[in-house]
Image 1 (cartoon, rainbow, N blue to C red):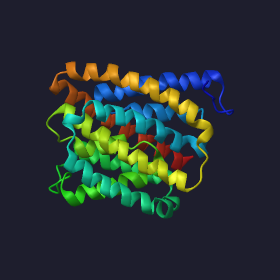
Image 2 (cartoon, rainbow, N blue to C red; image 1 turned 30 degrees about the vertical axis):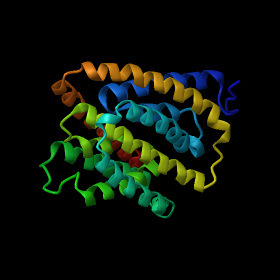
Image 3 (cartoon, rainbow, N blue to C red; image 1 turned 45 degrees about the vertical axis):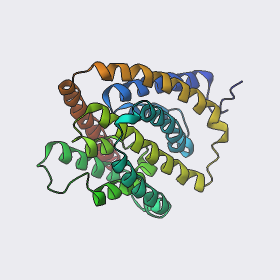
Length: 250
């Protein structure tokens, strides 16, 4: 018998399980979007103390399953360098992020994403060794506070020529990044044990969503995938920009 957290009703838990399926389906089919969708629903149902680490646990399983299904497409060199940076980000996260206002951080991340997508192309390679390590560290830092940084990872990998390689490598990187983020909260002694039953249900539904979503990914033409991928990144970045600006004005 699965034990649900006392802070959640059965209806709320069921809503989260269904959302996990939909979020994984979207991410598998389009490469991005599911993590922010899931976080947007969770923020209304789960206390803030548990929100980011519970989201991280679900995203670890969702991304790991997607990466496993597409493992032959993963760029292992990029993953290794990103992972190194992510570990460094984990080490410094508890000391740095507590000093940064969330609204300003969200707006900075959103602005950076929009520049990457629509601004002049930078001469500095986003997939060079130093850049990948730096991205891994910074993204893990940001994720420990914001929760979902999929658009930032997506912007870094948008140059990849094969859609399966993009989705696979992004999923592998997100697995590492969410793992490091969750470990930050374990280090801070956040008790996640009461939430593991709900997480297990969300993981199973997320796995099913990934299976169905990957079937769609294989059928979507490359050019159409690139079009929707770019615009989805842009819309998610604009959402972050608006939320951050609203928070500063409130």
